[in-house]
Each structure stands twice: as C-alpha cells, then as structure tokens.
Length: 211
Image (tube, rainbow, N blue to C red; front, side, top):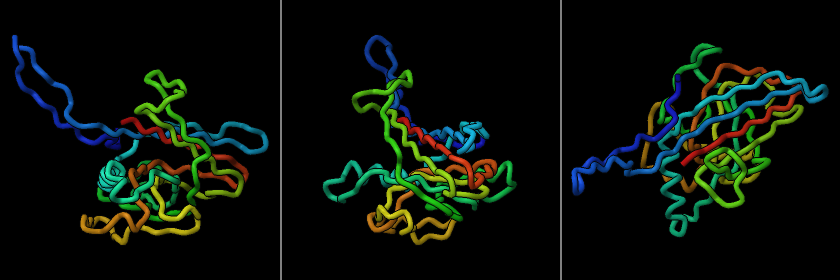
C-alpha cells in the first residue's frame, strides 16, 4: 500500500494482577478511505470504480483538537471535498503524500457534500452516530473536468466553493504557529493515479472516515 492511512497509536503495556497484560490502544485512530465511481451521465455506463486509502495530515489532528475544544474555538466540522490536478510524480503512480501537506497543489474544484452517513461496523447505515462516517460528494456534468490526481476533505471558512482561504504555507515547510481558525483546514490528502473526468460524466466520491 502506497499511502499511510492512520495516525500512529501508542500502546500501553503494563502488567495487571494474575499476570494479565493490558495492550489496549491509548489513543484514537483516524483512518480514511475513498470510493470512486465514474459513470457516463447519459448512458450510465460505469467508466471507473476504485478504492484508495489516504494520508491523515498534521492539520487533521489540529482540527480534531479544535473540534473537541469547539466552545473555545468556535470550530465547525468538515464542509467540502476538494479535487485537483497537482499531485507530483508519475501520472499513474504519484509520489507518496507527506503529512505536512496543508492544501492541494492545484485545486480545480470543491463542492459541499450530497450526503453524510453514519455506518455500523458491518457497513450498514446507522440511525445513530457511530465512529464510521461517509462523506459523499457528486461532481456532475461540466464539474471538476480534467485529469484528476489529488483530493482532500476540507473544513472551509466560506460555504461558497469559489472562495478559497488556503493556509499560507509552501510545502514542505510547516509552521505550527499559524492560527487555523482563520483558514480552510485540510484534514487528509490523497494522491492517486490520474483519472480523466470527461465533461459528460458524473463522478461520485465517498470518503469514509473511521475513528
């Protein structure tokens, strides 16, 4: 697998009575995976289906902390999925992402979610919140057209997809003193083999986060 897809989980290992050992993880794990479905908008012919795992970036951990402290930061949750054409490296096998990535290299489109769905451990829709949630975004005809090879889930400052507020950072530098409450926050980054999205196609992206 090319991409790291989880936050490292330190473990506690200490002995309890009767020699029983406690190896339970001491921190939450955040994993992400994306399901791609590209179809012709007129014939509904399936042009591509793919499943990839993503990298959780440093700012994803910062946003999680901000959400836990929402009363002090006024932070909201994820709002949009952004796609771009700027992944570095070979077209079919781009470079492995870096956790210092703070936004897409060449963003061409972003859009609000068409649905947000909680799922149980078997993958079925849950009527109550769980630790598994799907963020689905649909780019229709004329949207996000081009050779896509990067994407990210973003907490945006503006709900207008044309208004961008990227973190003022030039990769690979990472300045932890920047106040992320003022900027769009990317929580994860996925670089993938190029997908050509025609003008007459519909691309459905479901980004699943498991906590």
